[in-house]
Length: 203
Length: 229
Image (cartoon, rainbow over all chains, first blue to last red; front, side):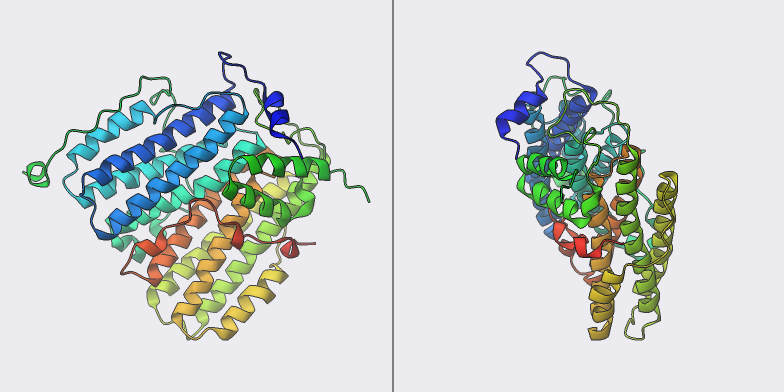
């Protein structure tokens, strides 16, 4: 058994060192997971999720929090710094959409797209990541976020369950979130979205 | 007998145990699923996250271990294809929509088997065309024999889809040829979605049944007893 102190010594990334691409991607993934948890929290606070959707949103928020924790433990073990908050770009872009969502269906649509993008991002990471520890974590997280996407899709449009041919044969990473667009080092914004009433948004 | 893979394998388990309980148990069962799959060269399985990823060159033994893992996964895919053909023909399966799904998924799993076999061939191994005897005799046959109705047969399909994606996902960290990780997980993620879809078909009134656990469930991945010889 390898003691924790041994792991840290062998990881050896000192404060201020430039991160390896693998660790940098791990930090990116962690920032996205934290961002997803924050976005769910914001959406739940709007009280616009209906029935099952509200329960699902709370469950999926918890999953993303757990995914962030798992990735944070790996970052810490590598001697790197865990982001203090969710990805600023992801949160800012989607807070605006959440604020403009008129109803539960609109929120479900936003999170369906986000979950699909998250699954695609985890999948895309596997083209470059070789560390067993990271691929092990991603392997345990990716299918769950793919399932989140399917559940939101079926919530948005139950007719998808009528047509299995509409589901992908294999998951694509085409909708992955790009590090270049969602820079993990960007300043974090914690501002809540502008509250819009359902009536106001619909008018 | 001294097993040259034991040290590396144990180190891998130890590290993942530090990453979180669920991942740890998942990784542990994944490692148990087929013992020989641990990195036999001892050069590419880090005991921690490396500050810089080393170039990965899989040895012949590493590739052989991957072949065994992939063949086991292929055998499961083949068992699912055979099971779905039985279910579709079963008079107790009364819902046309479920039959449509299982017919389509049977085609999908045939494609997955072919894709995984292509990886095996690329690694220098032999293609695997058989079903998994353990899955057939311990899971499929008794479930079909005791099924009372449509719901029971659909539940078997959900279990098989879950076993498929869990097995692939838990094997991922152990494949020595990292170029195959993306292809394997692209399949696993699609199978995970299908597991949720089938679950929702069983209870269309509620979306809650399709919600997964926070991490891939280790409980439904194939165990060591299901490894192909």
